[in-house]
Length: 131
Image (cartoon, rainbow, N blue to C red; front, side, top):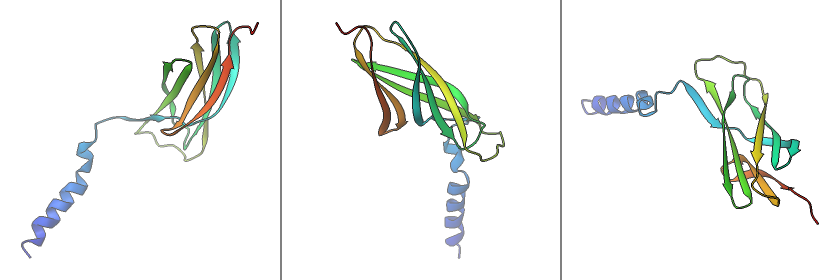
């Protein structure tokens, strides 16, 4: 019987205090799965997209957008945040985030909008004249 009490105590402490290993953050931050993309404006070498994604409640808001460039590819990942202390109705909510990108030269570029770590929504745009 004496051996069971210390083992039970250790298991209780591990599971009860597992949150001690998490950072003390006041908000959740995650990537927004981009469901659709619409080009709203192209002017010279600047393109503006309207990115649409969905969340599980209306308390999420845009945090920041990360844009990486590699050759003729742009990789776009939108991050959203939610205050952990808010109580929100569990209702599917639409988020629309504008993204503007200025390209370096007249050529075709492919824009990859993050959906998950292994998938993206892709579109290609050609800038400049084709003479």
